[in-house]
Image (cartoon, rainbow, N blue to C red; front, side, top):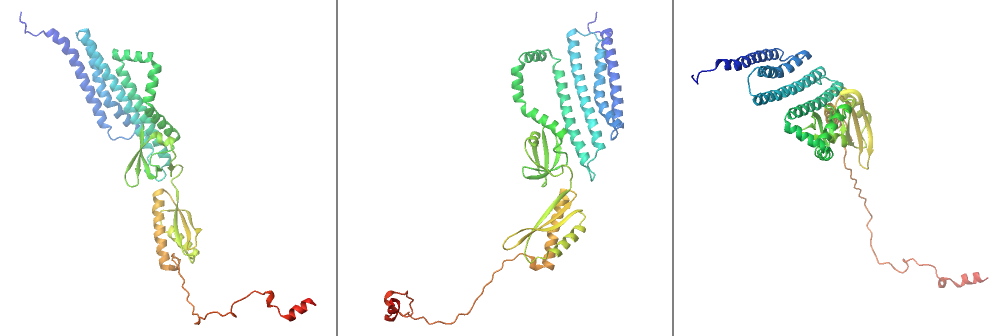
Length: 382
């Protein structure tokens, strides 16, 4: 008997099930990827869901066909169990991936339905903030559950889990202390998503820095400062510390310009010029345009020019324009209104005097008893 002669019957037992599973898996993968390419770029909910399902399914279906084929392959029980265990882990990973992509597709659909690139985007920013934070929390939970399910397929890990459950008090205490920052940020993220003290694109003052909320993750917030720097702030900071939110209810703001002017400044022409400046500037929203004297000192008076704008950026630019044009107006029309330091020097001519030493007759004296005359004494005595 030729020991090198192939056993075609044994080969057929392996080749037919595995080859059929490979063929079906490749066909399913090719079909699903073609569907994903066809709906690429679609912004409807159906297109987003199809694209989210097709790619993980293209990975999971070949594994399903391979697992079914292994039942008909004459393998040793130990080897068959190892292959089935690997396939089962792959399926858990594929299902976790699928769940994450479905949540991401739903998030993208909500974001597309509520764009923020509109003039009045307060409601859209509220929806986008809730959607982003909740989607990240859900996706993080799905990943944790998927990883735990994959690890629990190993007998050794199950034994460790039983041991930890037996000593749940100490383990819970240690885990709680170690994971306090993580869970603190997670709870803070849920609070921000529900109560919304901040939203995407909100204008905030954080630690004395002016910026906009650029990104809200599951653990930190990215604040884009006005000079293009980024400030990374933990989520819990916004729950535990006070900060300013300039767009909490509306983006409209009041802007003030202070001028120190001379007391001779005519207020009526100044108010008329402020009204002309506001009416000629497209950044003024038509609500507030006031000039008032708010303070005085011994040299000048403080004039406050109060204007309004639709958002903080327009308010800042409008304030700069009002300040510049008002100073130009005062220089041209009322230069006496600009503050100045006054000094008055007075000089008087005095007649020339000749100094001499005083005599006894020039010095004043008080009356004394010895200065009385005999006649005065006789009259007093009667």
